[in-house]
Length: 350
Figure 1 (cartoon, one colour):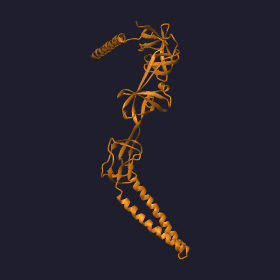
Figure 2 (cartoon, one colour):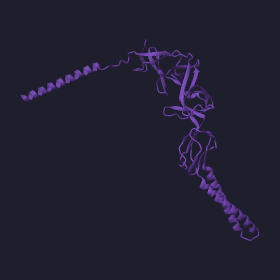
Figure 3 (cartoon, one colour):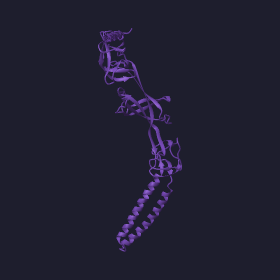
Figure 4 (spheres, one colour):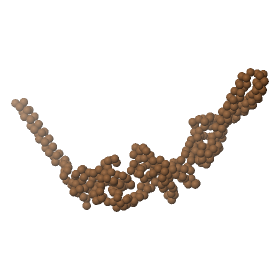
């Protein structure tokens, strides 16, 4: 009897649990939002026009020195004298640092004495050789010794010349790495010379902005520190490889002012202004969807949003110029893209 009661109780419990699960499922389904694809999606629109407008493109960049080098020595030695200091203007060939070359000069004097003696020997041996008083091989050995000594003289003289560090070009001493008494060796920087009589100005342009630049053409540039100063820069390099952001370096060559007013590291701008042509179709970038290589827009036709691929020829500020895919008078979606899909019903926001 107890066994039957347990079975009935178990069946009743299972029935109660099943009923509760079904009831919970019904409640959950009622609460879940069911998207109606046939319902109209509210969007904002604009009509494509080609009314001429003025565009302005601004690109920030910075000025870098035209030439800059860290000087070192080809010969080692103790620094005897530093003839310049940071901030000094130097000219090409000007002595900057003098290494101790006293030992080299003594070696040079010894070789010069040796050369004098060998030149006397050569004259004497030549007379004796002409008179057949000695073998010709002795004269040859003395002449060979003289050539070796003269070669040694040139080598020592070259080392003496290199013990004077000279400016490789006109510039300014922008950094001093050593002091008098330090030991100079090849590869160890001594001074930094910077030439800012000319500068390089670099901006990064997107692929759609590359058409703004032509190699060897001059453009107006502006210096942030001197808003009233207008300078010209000639494009020397148009980058052929983009960076991680798909931007390309544009490098201008700029002549500095007579008093080198523009310093290396200063910031500046390139500004381009132009008016759209009557045949150009342009739209706001906020209307674009998709990637930069596959731009698309939604065109509203008969109350439906139609997804269309377009071709962009230029991006200027917050506008893009469209060469294919749109016509004057087309109505495009500018906002309300959430849940929007191709062929969806749309209603225009008031």
